[in-house]
Length: 141
Image (cartoon, rainbow, N blue to C red; front, side, top):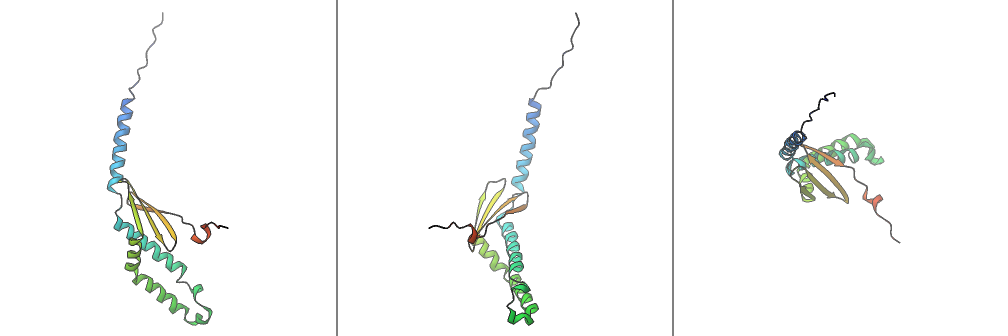
């Protein structure tokens, strides 16, 4: 009779142990890099300021009878938004809730009928798209 060589397999517990270590390191990194509320407020106020400048402080928003002053008005608008950053930040702070899961945070900000949700993790933020409150309301009869 022929002697068959047996193949020895490694116990799967080695993979489970390595996986547990990797998950522990990942969770620790996420917890350590979960951005605090103050970082979110800085991020959100920068985003809102940029959005205001993009939507309001544009030459196309200047009324026709003031077109001769459009550059001055646009520059004044941009300056006003920049100087009022603390007011914008305070408004965001008052209208934001934070759900802290230790590994990451979910920030929900409601301003002027808009609801913004932002995920904070690994020291970064990801803001999810929001719908225009005028178009998302259901019409009732």
